[in-house]
Length: 260
Length: 260
DNA sequence: GAGTGGTCTAGACCACCTC
DNA sequence: AGGTGGTCTAGACCACTCT
Image (cartoon, rainbow over all chains, first blue to last red; front, side, top):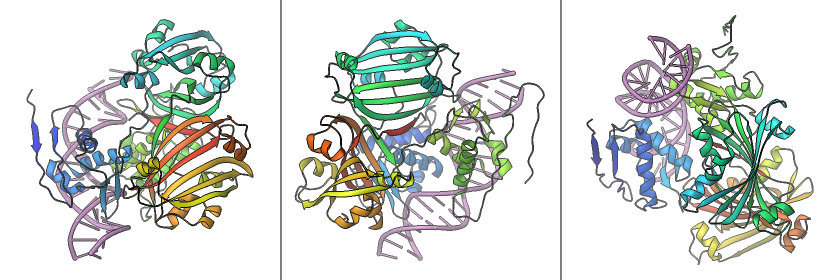
């Protein structure tokens, strides 16, 4: 199949300088707004667009790239939501200072570690099937006579213990014990056709119990970062509830908040 | 307004019943998509739309309300981003189970407490002007010869100590000492025309120092929930950097993650 | 007044899921 | 095959900010 590549070289216009080069592939299945957002993000991360720079305005950019305004707008909005750009009505769009970060996405710890080249490993501490505790039944929206699988795992990165994770899943969708030793939980669920779409997290802290301290190579009562998470699939049903404890000395959460 | 109810004898398939009544005020300055989003959200919270219910499809809703599809779509998308609805291509839109929560918005602790009727009070522990430490200069993107105001406050709720907060601001925009005793920091900044638009937060945990323990009525080494936050205004400039420590026994963060 | 982003319309075609 | 959401177009009018 033919593939059309459009290459635009922007003239330098507004105030500073807009060296934004964008290649859009209109035959690709990747949405145009996404292609454009990626290109702009790359320009920012590469330093072609410096923090504080004024950004080419919507109409001009749309015209230059032969895109409609809504499509261009959506690409820009994507980056505003990511915290890389800021817009002010009547003024313009600017690159945020210090745009070095990535926000917390809906990813698993396992994937995060693997992507960072941290060599994640998992030890299965417990795997049992039975009726849910009251809290678990409430979080998963299950009747008390349904069966759930309880999983307790120790996650290490580069051989160092990092977190103790307890998870509860309806028995119908729970992965096998062996699978959990080699893959992340979400990875296993994905392979079974369960797509996590949304999660609610409560992040807190507490002191380590004696057992937790031993597992994590910390002293009893050492500060732990805790996360309780309920995850929902693409039909809105709760599919997983978990209590995780991280060594505070080796882990933190990074989030970005945007006012819209 | 007319309301059509469809009754099926067999299995209830399509959305069963959509009692969604919406009144739109086209002369209001409030955007239509926002009015609609609010109405839907109210229906969910009131239980008119139950968890798991299928939602009326975009096209039908748009036609019924005499709105364009993009406007209708945007309202729905708003609620998807909030974690109240889930969409699946080719299938439809459904209400998420257990939609009881509010997500972390870009708000200040002071405002949150006040809204929850928790009677916040602030004690100013320190207020001084001088050159920034290296970390602060880096976070605020300031030269080392610029002056910053360092603020240290104890925040209580209902008379109980809750958090120790250390903040750094460029001297030009810093509120007075007196102002900080009666208002929140963000409230004071807003009054000075500074609009926080974006914040990056790192959430972790550690043990309390002796001084912190004393201020917070905890034992030394008690677990504290920590947040380091850099805030940016609507021109993308860093305006505030803060280190906050919360009593883990009395505070946690609640977040929602959505896969888009 | 000029320029910017914010909202809105009325269509179109496509990809995906279920029947 | 029919219905759903996902993407895209080519305009329009308005509100806000800066000069």
